[in-house]
Amino acid sequence: MDITFRQTAPTTLTLALCAVAMLPLFWLAYMYAVPTEDAVILFEYAKSLAQTGVISYGHSGIPIEGATDFLWMLMIAALKKAGVPEFLSALALNFAGALIILSQLKDSARRIIALFGLLLTPYLYAALQGFGPLLFCAVYVLCLTASMRPQASFYGWVLLLCLIRPDGVVWAAGPVLLRLVEGHSRGALGKELRNFLLYLCVPGLIYFGWRAWYFSELLPLPFLVKSAGDRNLILFYGYSGLYVLSAFAPIVPASWMSEDRARLLRRLAWLFFLPCVFYSWMRLEQNVGNRFLAPMFFGTLLLLSRETKLRPMVLFTILSVACGIKITAETAETVAESSSETYSYVSQDLARLEGKMLVTEAGRLAYHSNWVTHDAWGLNTPQYAHKLVDYREIDAGSYDLIVAHCKIGLLSNPISLPSNPPRSWDNLCHVMTSYMTEKQYKVLLVPVLMNGIACSASHLCAYSSEASTRRPGCQRFDIYALSPAYPNFDELSRLLKNRGAIDYSPTLKYDGDEVCS
Image (cartoon, rainbow, N blue to C red; front, side, top):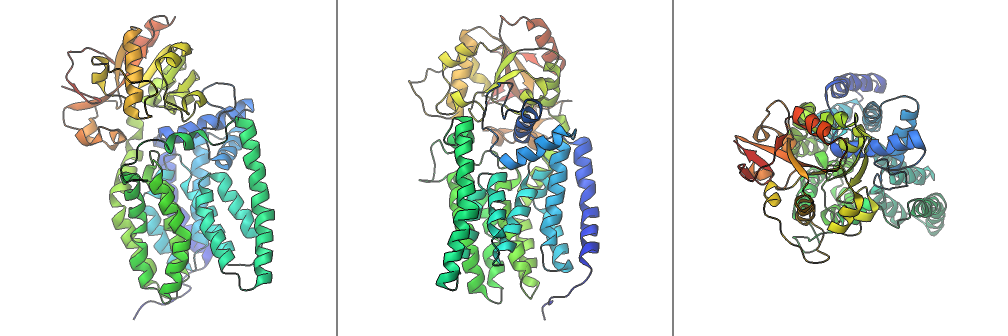
């Protein structure tokens, strides 16, 4: 006999217990962890908005839309203006989001099951790195809850979802279409369409028009960059499809145990078909902890919590934990090890000086250093977003420092590229290293990890094209090229060597981005 619905404890008490269970993790993250590169990029935009009133990046002084999580950025900027550090704001908003998600579930027993799922899946640990997946999912869950009622407030929640993150449009499409097709009369459908146009389409078009005017770009820079490149599965990226599969796979067996499996599977298909296709089509390079697919997990939990029996929800939670266990372990380990990364310390050292740099690692170097910073990949620099940066553009930038995560061997074996080469990380590295060599920049290699921690024993090095080759005795180094014309050349060289930098030499034993002893 299965366990049936039962109110096991008052809602307030259960949520308080959940808060007590989660709070130590958030507190430890704030005290000891360092937010990840991609999260800090958004903090840079929030800081710029709070301090200058301009949504910009790297002290450029012009509007730039590299942080597309618009409402998330506005909330962090507002709290920054009030004196709250960006990382603390991100953690607090995620903590509130987690409690909102749990509060929408049917009863206390289901909240406890969801809490275990939250603690044992990667989405929480992505939040502890400074991203906003739990707040985003909280609004998504509120959208689903509102979609079950006839009120027009549903479209208000949908609008908020789309403003927090632009891919909110992808997640909102399913609930909106489902609400329209489940209309029971022509009059109800007409009212629904009117609410859809009035409360969602009109405000959405106003926002889209404003952002296109403000940023002088029809589409956000990250969309231009992430949708480019060669796909290895016709229209899709294979590795992106694996992320989607790990989130979607537990849904079918759990739904099959539902009392009305046909209806539930139909609803889930409406909700998740478009996200599955969309994320398989995109380059999920910033998908830390599979955070882009988090709404699939929490949305399914919400629907299964409405079932009379607990068994489908329990099975879904167990399967989700099993399918994501590798991602969860890697994401949690990254949080625990984050204070060992060199970038935060180097960028804070750079704040003693002034200069202009071109980087491939666009987060902490810009945020802490206060240097004028351009992103070579184009996610945060408009002139490099539409096509691959070239030699002439780098030369026109007059950069004092160039920082690149590239194969070290390119420094001694430059390769000439054809005109207008396709956008790829390898081609970007060819351009940057060729420029460093020809302009006789002083090249130092800076270890990614401090205190002699080996990349072979750390997931902090995993976000790399060479991740599969990590070996004992080898360490990932990134390239720091100093312009000989930089006035503070000697001081900058000294600062980097204090952080473990070594002089580049063709005689070094290197493989990919590693130097081996």
